[in-house]
Image (cartoon, rainbow, N blue to C red; front, side, top):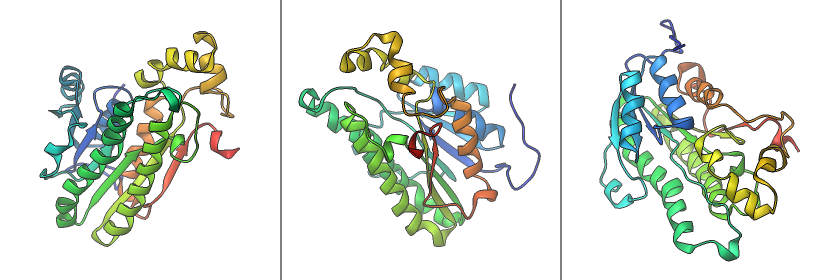
Amino acid sequence: MTRTYPPSRDALTGRTALVTGGASGIGAACARELAARGASVTVADIDGVRAKQVADEIGGTVWEVDLSQVSGLETLRLDCDILVNNAGVQTVSPIADFPPDRFRTMLTLMVEAPFLLVRAALPHMYERGYGRIVNISSVHGTRASAYKSAYVTAKHALEGLSKVTALEAAEHGVTSNCVSPGYVRTPLVDNQIAEQAEAHGIPEREVEERIFLSEAAIKRLVEPDEVADLVGWLCTDSARMVTGASYTMDGGWSAR
C-alpha cells in the first residue's frame, strides 16, 4: 500500500529529488518514499527500462545514465532540492586477485560520481536556501570485511565526502548525511552469494547466516523500505539540525 503524508513539516510537496540507482533495491524504495511525501522524483539508473517502471509507478521522470562515465558529469548542473547518492556495485575477491580496473571503476562510481553530483547540485540548493543530500553508505563505511577492498574503501571515502559537504553547505540551509545499513535484502546482496561462498569456502546456503548476519545482533536482513524511511525523514524539516551524521541501520553489528 502506498503511503501518503498530510501537509506538515515532514511533507516534501514542491520539492524535487534525484535518486541514483533508483531502478531497484534501496534506490527504488527511496524513490517511492520521497514521492509518497510529495516530492517530484527523478529516477536515475543505467537500466532505463526498470527505471521507467519505477518512475511510471510514482509519477516521476527517468534519467538513464551510466554514472561510471564521469566525464559527462563535470559540467553538469542539477536543479534538484534533494539528492540521494545510492548507485553502487559489489565485487568479492581477495586483494591479490582483485582486478585493478574493477577497483578503479567501483571508486569512480561510488566516490567520484557522488562528488560530481553534489558539486552539480549545490549551486541550485544554495540559491534556494534549502537542500538535502543523503548518501547511502554502509556499515562498511566504518567497519571492514575481508574480500571487499574496493567497496570498503569507497564507503569510507563517501562518509568523508558527506561530512565535508555538511561543513561547507550548512550556512546555505543544506544538510548532508549518510545512511549506513548492514546487509539489505536487495539484488546487490543476492548477487554476491556465490562470490561470498567461493571466497570463504562455504556452501551458498550458509552465506546468509555465517557471513551476512554473523556480526548482527538482530538476525535478519534489513528491508529496503526501512532504509527509505530514514532517508525520507532526513529530507524533512524535522531533520533540519541533522547534518554531518552517519546513521547506522545494521542490527547492532557496529555495537561490537
